Image (cartoon, rainbow, N blue to C red; front, side):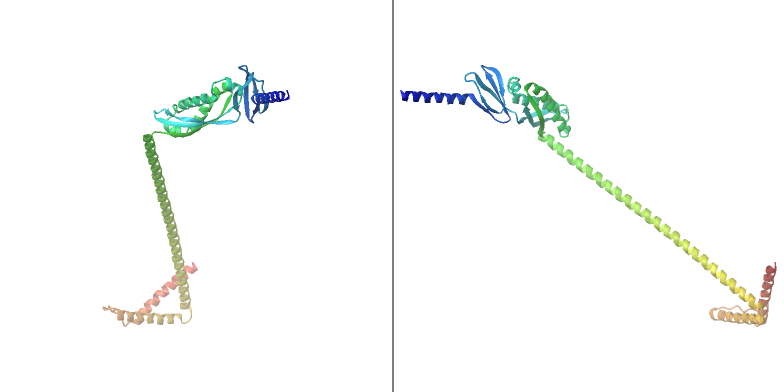
Length: 315
């Protein structure tokens, strides 16, 4: 009897353990389990330990509440200018309501992926090929808006969408490369011409400034030379006037007239002798021997000059 009771207890314990294993549920952190009772939604279990009713309750769906990343397969899209490009992307989304994500759509991942592809084709078809590389942000926003509007009925929130790669055909890539090379060469030619133009302008400005400086210097030089000549003339005139004044004063002094006669005679003979030394032909005055007459004539001129000077002074 004791052995049979012990065996029955063991069997009961095993059954209890099996039931506990089948009915006890541990929900991981950032996860939710959807429980159905007799095929109908019963509850949503959050993270922790839970006990279900055997044979009545079952875990129908398991949902992660973390942000999920989905690769959107590459697909052919036709641009506005009828060029086929292969585009793929990445979709970031998060389950916000586990119950709605289970019963609102059969498979929200497939639905989001398909909707993202169709929205991407629609967005690419509105722009030209050249704009597809520039308008990535705009395309991403259009895809997010389209998918998020539909995902609200699935209990899912679309967070981000990013285009990974845009691959035009090889022929288009070659044409774009030639276009970019031509554009770079064009910009280089423009920069070079602008540099040459600026260099010529700088040289012209330098020559202009140099010419102005040279002319200013020449002007100052001429002014200085003119002022020097004027000063020289003024000094010579002043010295001559002073000399004439002293001569006039000497003539009116005692013995001045005799000294003047002697000086005139000496100068006459000296200059006549110099002419005889340097000239091949010599014209002799008729009154060569009449030195006294020449002196007398010179003194007469001096007397006349003296008289006029005195008259001018008295007047």
